Image 1: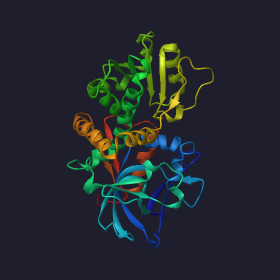
Image 2: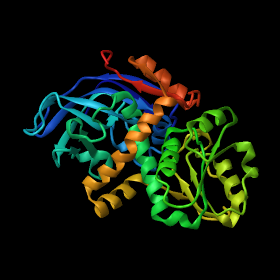
Image 3: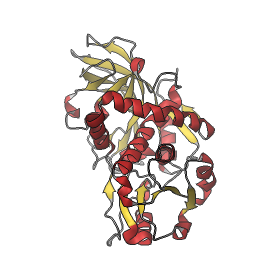
Image 4: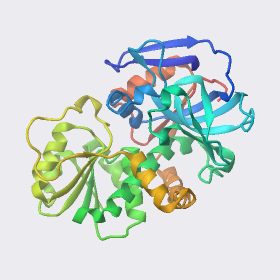
Length: 366
């Protein structure tokens, strides 16, 4: 149950929003009432809205009106009321939150490290998204400021898993990895992991807009950066993996046509350019585009390595990334419903500098 101030999105027309304020209800046994302290908002959350139906993102935090949805965000929440014997009031949790003042979960699978939401409406959803990490025992949380933590952690995890996925598959026989929307924080995360965990011989190439080219180059994560209009300058005969964070159908088609049969794998991740997400008609040269599902790779590695080893490897890369991000990320904070709505519209329009991190909260004391 979502309570307090909240931002509702028209599922069919995601630029249309509605602010609501809904009273809370009494807790049942096993439930926790969580106050959302603050959350990050990035282009990744626009992907959640644009793919809300196909990837079931609208199902996490349903509203009373089936035409309206709440976009999931990543951030921190505090237990303000508990009906579970093992979770005390005051405990801080990190995980998937609604764009709202607070919400209720049914705690299950409680361990020293985490717990899961076992609410009926979340039974069919990926377990990865239903897990909440207990900050007091979280190896990634300790000693890290919460604002960059929640801005970068989910994006870093995706980048970490993408790096692991392509290396796990021996780069599909390629010699370079081309990342679109290279200024996006998820692309930067993958590039950082590729650069700092280089197990094979490959080049990391960033594709970006002309206005963001200098920023991407200055990150230091890419071996080469070119703007979209200069795609043709890349050597077409080089075996290549494409990782598309942009969701621009025309750009994706151009990449396939440029590399042809030398495109060994085409990975679809995000939709930074959500308004250009339609796939053009016609056959794609080279490998057929495949959607990357991060929870699947995470579950594979947890099964193979064990949860503790997975977290240890993740943490070993994470601390270096968040330290390096201090060189390029500026954080802005917003604490009112109207400001949150305005920032959402600004992100939809693509009018956010890539070096800006947005942190928001309906709790004005944060």
